[in-house]
Length: 577
Image (cartoon, rainbow, N blue to C red; front, side):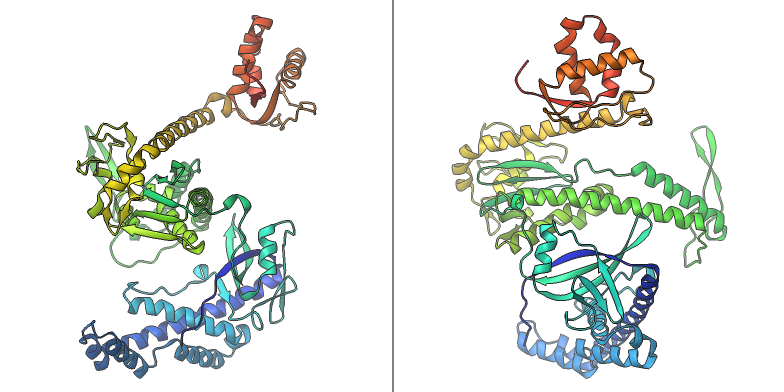
């Protein structure tokens, strides 16, 4: 009988671990890793015996229409060679007891979970969902978990308890998410570690029973959403709102830093492993003769890694981790924004893996597959639906409102309908049509009926997208401007000013006392008229220049660079000037 599955969510809590406790934890993780690899090896051996058996070959010949007979035959073949999850539990227990030290380090519940983990990895190979399994090395074995919260790994009185280890937690009592997780029933506990900025950090993940805490701003509406997923953006059209949102907006890519580290690692590899590379050779480049570096020799080879290579590799991993974390944060905001307008989603059946072969770097930077999977998970968790339909049968990007299909190149991002309606963005119009797809059939009559009410939504969404690009481009120009290249040494950034408080700013040390006094006087005049909101660049100078030019005359030109460089304050006028 299948076990009943209740809804679950995870509450992650950081732990305080000293050096002595970390040494003990690492030894327990080493024992768990070796037990996992032993269980995985045994599972693959038994799977190979099952596949080579006569009963398994006979089961494959049974027609797929006879589901019950075929299923029973495969089950009998697996039982013949004891290939099951619970048989692997027995193997894990006997292996731990024979080794003695593994049984001392890892409790029985954790042993069984490691065996289950190994069996599921081999089962993916059996079902054709994976080509092979991966045995764990110490740097890739990150977590251990228990079966219940009653023994073994457990959470008790805001401490993680595991045998004689008792790890203190860091809990923010004002955080409603953490508070909700601590008040919910705990199924079991998972212990894991991560490398953050070159240091190992330990965390406890409480697998809670129930529904996760929902922040007030992340509400989910009961509406229909048409979706069009692209490589760098996502278009959605709801009942009363539409938008075209970019993936991972303003996320730093660290491209130049990563490339510099890759070159450094490559130089180190060639210097320490010259026998693993083919010899350099001369090649013609125009009229010049240049030296080309030899490629890596084919076949297996042993690589020597210097300490400098390992340090550069760690820095590169940290930059890639930060880039992925920033992208996930921004993309989760996109998912929450879409769900605010509806939880019943219709979209084309798109393979992001197919995109990876052609647009590898863009997919890595933008992560459209993460948005797609996260949107599906959250929509279904909220009681909604996520419906995929065939791209080939519907061809929404080529379809016009009269039913005709005209092919477009990928570079053509504007849809000009033959019926004479206004021009629309290609992705937004496809998202609008996807609302009216039912069982791989586009209902054009319904789309024609609803279009007059949606026309303004599509045009407004396109205009917002254009404005967003212009703002993003202006911000990128500001960050590369000469004014941003000056060192911040000797000055501090302007603080957020409140109308009732005095404005305090720090000028460059190179400014004279007279210039300091004039600048402070000008700011004291401006402050009561405007609400100073946040640090920015040009708006302050522009408003000051336009407002005070008549009063100050030529003096304003002498203060341009000073004010523009020193007081990058964004102003919000209370009324138009």
